[in-house]
Length: 53
Length: 138
Image (cartoon, rainbow over all chains, first blue to last red; front, side, top):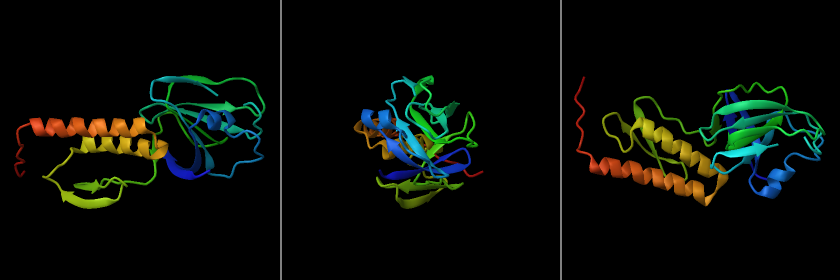
């Protein structure tokens, strides 16, 4: 999956973007590890959504 | 966190791109973490230095230099710089548009592009409907 660069506070992260329901459901499951400054960014609709992870 | 063995910080972010809360994700736990009014969730390795109130920013890094305004094309590439005095959009409105543009860049969603376009129209109309302003030298 393509990764994008983001910044949160003072730190940069390189993240995969989870957008579809399938991608968001899967998330980071079944992975052995995550490189140091990498992660996943989940996108939700801007309709003030309540989210459970 | 179901089927997940990596210990994670689960960062909940609202529509203002501000970090609302950080939960510690427990590997293989079925426990759910819930937040209202969430637009983004960021998952990174646990032990991050992320704090409540931190702002989420997207790349490309678009800087607005002090006393100058950079006009960007639709790809976020600078087209020209304006010295103080001329404005297409005011600095606060520029900041708002950059936020909307970055969001659309990340999501590639039609609704986010629509929201950006609507906002630009709104600002343009306000300028069009206003009397010209003249800046006096200090």
